[in-house]
Image (cartoon, rainbow, N blue to C red; front, side, top):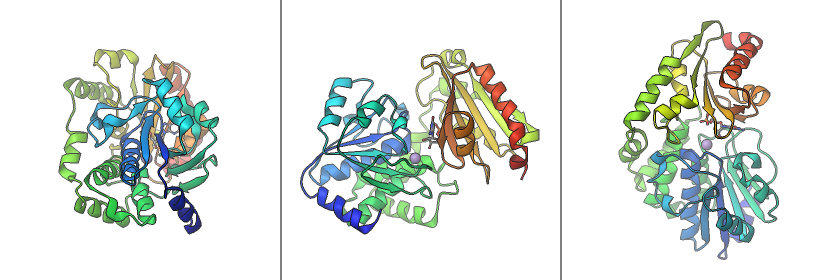
Length: 338
Ligand code: 5GP
Ligand code: MN
């Protein structure tokens, strides 16, 4: 995003606007954190802004400042469609292609207004009027911080905005450990703490609010963990029955895929989760080093994401999906051994 574009956006925001802010389907900490941070900032400037999620999101995110103002398309279709159709500006955050907005895709694709994309995923699409894309960024939350900075408004970052941004940086970097975590990320974090983000409280609210049944489900996932030593790979399966038996709630399987990646020598980890309702197997992929799970998911499982963290889906059964996965691995033997 160059200085001319920033100037144009600044001019756009000079008078009160109706603004809609949309994260990707199945919103995570970065998606909810970044959209709400932007919402607080824009409301503070005097705009009428609202965050609209395509579908519901996990309970561990249902305390973030302003979360009670979020509208969800799946729960409130008519209101959501009219808000989108009336919007002067639509911000799309933390996704690179309109298809990532789920059922909102057709609504957005047929809305003729100013779109502003802020996102760190690879291969960004070109639907937006203004595109702020940086695949080297830790998180969309960090980009919202830089966006506010570019507009010359760092002093407007209050405790609520700082908290929202901190959440997304923390969750998208695996608590500041992934390669995308730079010295600059830490400088941003330090500033957020100075501006009122309570780092210890945020960690506890996100990570220490497990239910007993969720921990039991984690036990099931660990029992189902399989290792494929010839490919330095590991995978986990969870069936719909296993979810049902453990009172599954959205978000309960978040982070499970990383258990495979924590094994010594493992460079590629996958989790396959049956979703009978959507008639798909939802897939999460993680890697260490040069192996691109973004490419792997694009090529084989209708998905994408980042170099070391991606997602996708399969219309086959759970068993057939795993068989397909295993049958593809020989093509990547060299890549996974380098
Ligand atoms: P997760 O595995 O945590 O759901 O997602 C990891 C990363 O991949 C996230 O950045 C997420 O936005 C992206 N991702 C997850 N599922 C999909 C998908 O079905 N399609 C695409 N293009 N990206 C996905
Ligand atoms: Mn993100």
